[in-house]
Image (tube, rainbow, N blue to C red; front, top):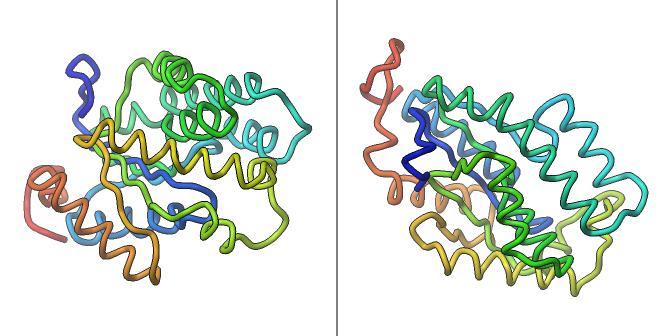
Length: 226
């Protein structure tokens, strides 16, 4: 859960997973489900790339020239700081539900684990960048790096080209993070059809957030399902 110091009226849900895990698809489906089933006012966004500035940073880190691991980590942190300040936190303060495709755990897993920078240092950098804003729940769409790689189509980006060892370390770091903070993480098996995984995500959301999902009517007050 978020620190009381940074508590906001809205609900903040993040999706994590390795390349090819299906987390982007599942984040979109979950956002639609929350809107249709509980009448949530949902902001679906992503990192990097959730803002105009973020789209430029996304192009640099995924498709630009090679760069050192620290420069890569700092670019992600810059995107995250602007994203939270300009988009995520204002939406949460307005009482909206924010569903975010990747958040700071991606940096811990990819730059801390995959690039072998210190995970604690990457976490501290990210938390400073977002002024301590923690998700209410983080959904890990869990597939092995091998399965994820087999699902990728099109020309690979910089991170997708990083090699099997990089992606194995990233996956292992995700699993370790979930084990260390079981109160914040829900691990969802990413094997199966899109519909099967979506049902598992819905069950995880219902089980972990319970009454906080409650319906909201047009006035923004608690109410029944849409």
